[in-house]
Amino acid sequence: MNLVINAAEALPDQRGEICVQTGLCVVTARMQSRLIRQHHLLPGQYAILEVRDNGEGIDPVIRQRIFEPFFTTKPYGHGLGLASVLHIVQRYGGGLEVDSQPGQGSTFTVWIPVMSSVTTEMLPVPSPTSAESYILVIDDNPEVRALIERILVRAGYRVLAFHNGNDAIRAISDHPVACALIDITLADMHGYEVCRQIAAMHPHIPLALVSGYAVQAENLVDVPVMATLQKPFRASELLALVRRLLENTVHKETPPSHSMDT
Image 1: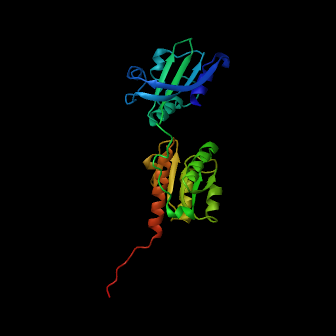
Image 2 (image 1 turned 90 degrees about the horizontal axis):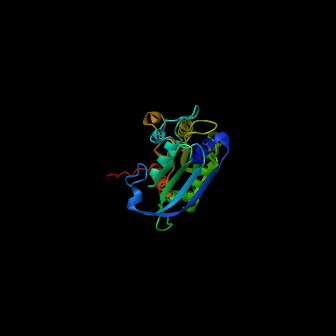
C-alpha cells in the first residue's frame, strides 16, 4: 500500500500510470549485490512484487535516504512509509530494489523468498484448555483480525474476535477466555488500558500485545502483559505465542502439590 501511495503522489497532477506486477524469479549471486541493504539475501527462488510509475522520479541524492525513518520530502506525512516497507521485507528475509531517475519514473521491486512447500511449519499443538475456552482477539483492522482468527481456527482453537476494547471486555463475562491478543491502537481505547481493565477483573487471563509498532519497555511498566508480538508475523510465531500463553493459564489454574508427613 505504501509503495502504491508513493507512486500515486509522484505522478504530476496525479495523472499518469502505475503498474503493479507479480512474478517468480531466481536470484543469482550477481543480482544479489544490487539489492539495497540485503547482505544476508541468499540466492534462490523468490516471489517478486513490482510497483512501477511514470512519475517525477527520484533524485540520486534523495534516493540514498528514502529508507531512513522520518526522512521525507513531502510537506506532510511522517516519513515512515518506505522505512516500514523495508522493515517488512527484511523480516521475511527478502530484498528491495529501486530503479529511478529524475523525470523517468520509479520502479520498486520487492523480493520475498519462496518456501519449498506450503506447510504448517511445525505448528504448536493446541493446549487441552483450548477445547473448552476461547482465544480473545481484539484488533480494529478487519483484515488483520480475520487473518488472526483464520490462523487460530485452522490450528484447532475457538476464537472470540472484536474490533474494540469495550465489547471485548464485556464478552469475557459470558465466555471462558483462556488468553487474549490485544492490538495497541484501538478506536475506543488504548490497548494498554484494555489490558489493565481485563487484568483487574480477570487476573487469571494471560495477555499479549500484538502491534505493528515496536512496544517500548517503558510503556509496559504498569501494563500486565506476558508477551508482545510485532506485526507482520508468521503463523508459527502467532501460534507459538498462543501456546505460551495457554501454558501459563494451565500453570495458574493447577494448584501446587503439597507433601504431608504422616
